[in-house]
Amino acid sequence: MKLKYKRVLLKLSGEFIGGKQKFGIDQETLQMLAEEIKKLKKHKVELGIVVGGGNIFRGMAGSTGGMDRATGDYMGMLATVINALAIQDALEKVGIFCRVQTAIEMFAIAEPYIRRRAIRHMEKGRVVVFAGGTGNPYFTTDTTAALRAAEVGADVILKATKVDGIYTDDPVKNKAARRYKRVSYMQILKKRLKVMDSTAVSLCMDNEIPIIVLDLTKNGNIEKALLGKPVGTVVEK
View (spheres, one colour):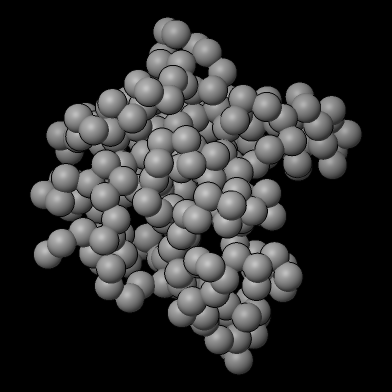
């Protein structure tokens, strides 16, 4: 089948990497992720990944405890590097070539983020994991995902969660909550739907990058989304 999206940016939360505990690094979750990504090899998808660090440290949590916000955010950026290296290890174990690029230079363990090099890696079939956020405090990894997607010319952002899309309300707390099949950027901003932060949504809107919010724990969902099959919630104009 023909791909609807060729170059893809996958956004993973740190809590997702933490598995059921939502803390630390869960090897079963990493293995499942690697197997799902392996399915894309036959389609020759060009894939970049942005991962959060909330399973290890969250800057906002540190600042509410009295820590300087910028210091907390830098610590959170280092946490994303740990997660990126774990993802790289998992992918390489299933035969997928992978490169980690960091916004904060640390030559001993990863490449510095260089846009043209990242694109070249993706063109050669290597998965690129973007770590270290944007390299600046006060920006979330959601914003990083939107920024990197725009920079490398991604066709879509896949926002991987453990929920099968965007709902009118929290489906766990409110059984009457209904799932959107499609929603516009402006609806997200106006209704303050908890998908991505407003900076990230605005970046996607300005650059016309669609977002698909899907449940990554369901077998084959990434592949279905890239083939244009109805999965999760699509965010576009």
